[in-house]
Length: 96
Image (cartoon, rainbow, N blue to C red; front, side, top):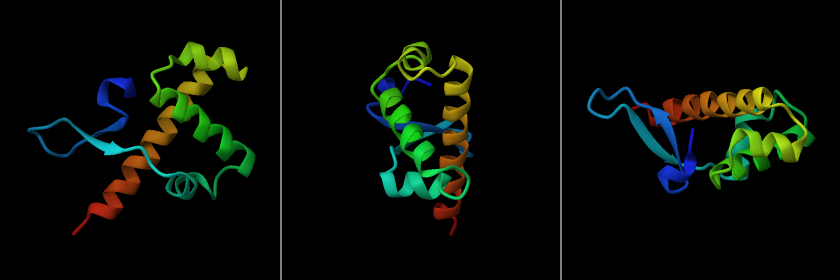
């Protein structure tokens, strides 16, 4: 995922066949915490939020891994978890 290409917006899969992705705003810290709050510690929440903000700035998985001491695979997993949780959040909030 390259968030820089989308002007700071997060690309999510779309159910619309005419548009395979939809762009949503990066969540506030409160929304981010609600996405993960019950599953991770407060320390991990802060770390995940910072990792995703750095990705928003266009950093690569390798760059983030080098600065955080985590593996590239772990950064990818955090990002995938974030995208799945955010997609579920928007599915729930956009239902009629």
